[in-house]
Length: 526
Image (cartoon, rainbow, N blue to C red):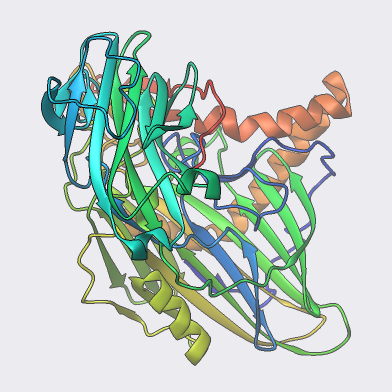
């Protein structure tokens, strides 16, 4: 995923060409295309999990160790959750349901639903979400019985739900959710003491009413148990600044006695279509002492297979490949239904996420259960260069990590620098009049993602220089046209606009630059 450069880059790539004083609603980090997209929705890069533009969480963690103290500078560690009342994507569930308006006490735990129909959850109409029981009327009322143990009641419990459209949901007669006119996929709600008190050891009932106001209909719900695994990296860095340019986002942190500069680069340069469509983004970093002392420093990054899943219940397969000079870590779903889904709020579940690292004596890599990988790093100050053979691909109550660590060793005021790469090979990108079209970079089917990663390494210096020059010119031209604030808005809009499209070539040679849907509502918490 990265290679140490030891400060050999020409020029200061860690200094933006101007200061953007606008607070971004979301900071662009990884913007390959509409599907491979990672944003920070928080003030500080470490406040929350990195998210897809739709609000779906996609773990991407960054940690710097300074003199044996670890500081998390990117992402929030997600704690694995176990489905104790599973959603249908994990396991279909027994339900009583009706499409006719029921009696007023239909939501109470002692309501007699013997006259209701019996079936399996989830419920829905034809659309992108797979349903167990057909629902084509305007309303559906559903009751689901389940049993909880006293042990589960002592844990932190999370309600998970998907709905399209209006949802009201009750636990043993206590109203927990009333969404109004909205639709969400895999939304979560931590059950407060008030709502948790409605639960009891033994039999419980969740009752839900969902109204479809038009288009696709869907309803599913369940309960997750938050595992007690302690966070491995609770200490956070101190964010000093964040600055967005058209193709790059700059962050600066203080971590103990060192300064960390971080730059996210998406080379979306439309005068070079092969480069623009290359599905590789960079995360560059520079570390230097700011207290005149020397410090022992290491950098760690990990990403989860969530980047390659539409939902977290899909089994995945991950592996580690090696070339003469690269580690390549990859993950994707086992099913691999290429271009198998359509509709709104669809996340890619075909193709493969890649992290690549240039081999040297300082770089180590690992693929395995997230907690195990992190604890191994803490204990040994390096990773084991292995892919855990025990991985089952079922990540229901655990998380998997593709991880790489770089030991920068002793760092002084001259500093050390390097970069990371995140890539995605989607195999085929667009179905156009029944033709499956490859991404533009591989339009002839004669290239591989390994080729693109090698090329991204070879061209790193020139790409960074081109992006810096483009950013400087765009900001200068925009300032001349509309002033500084207009230029700042252009900087925020550029990557969002370009990465919302996918470039392909049709079978008759036409260039197609096709857009995905825009997000019309606030992202749901996941």
